[in-house]
Length: 456
Image (cartoon, rainbow, N blue to C red; front, side, top):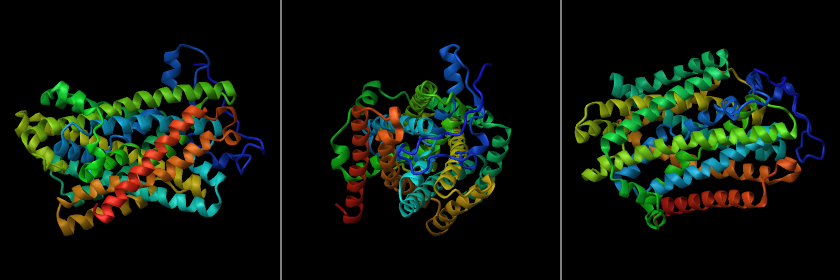
């Protein structure tokens, strides 16, 4: 395969708008895998798409992690198909924002964390780092709960023990990274195929009415006026548009060895955007599938109280009359949890290195983050029993949603700035759309906070 040589270190001019005019080799994003995947020069469109395929699927993992399951199950069982429109809207937002993240990483040679450190005063950078760490911990919390529940459902392992077992994923990531970034991507994609296959079978078994499903994609004013529905809707947005994914995507697109010319970067942006768009459509299918199954099986049967993953597991097979339904549900949950832990680990490494220039071994970083996430699971299980983890899971997604503006606003600001991005700055119409998305996210979060704390 013909490929370009390893690209030089990006060196924008002093007038580029960035504080630093040069990124050192030791400061590259994920330096150990930077530009390690060759990109063919010329060739068919399929070969080029294949070369860039991978980062989008790794990003899509965060859009179908166990946190999505809790919010989608609650939304489907309580409100039927109504919140499908929220899933679709949040997925469209995700497609736009991930495309902007890829553009930032490729055009500037900086991931979002590095860009924030380079553009803002140091105190602001520290605040953004702290907020992002909270988001990663909230995400990790959902993964711990989801994986632990899957281990319990499939193998009868107690929830607390399952939560402790999840700490071992640090070594899984280390092994895959040592083999090469393509092995990591292949692992992720294989588990995504398992998840999608499981839900395809469940949708076929549930046989939801097509007209009702299609009607669910039409937005309803009740989503905003009903506080209970709005709470779940914000949780869905928080679980779908993941703050740490913006940092992750802007970094891992730089694993491709594309030409460091304007033409090479434009081509890389095009293929990276195509990759993430295709992958996020898979995420839309999975998220929609979870809600559709919950609506067709639970809501249609009058079981509007199903919010917990374990409840769904216990009821699926009896209500559908097919024994394998619950097993498929648990297998998909385990695959989702395993996938999410890998990508959250990378995001944590990128955030820490980008904001603080602090490098820790992967296993140490993972064990620290996972330890912080395990403590609330053990505490809640001990105090409230295993049923309390469901509320903790949904709350974690709302916390994630609260962090979104602090990642989205800087991203849109950077890619709109011609001083920083040069000819790669987004056009005014795209910028207007991006700022509209950022505004929607901020407004919905303010509305949720108002309703939550003032009881409106």
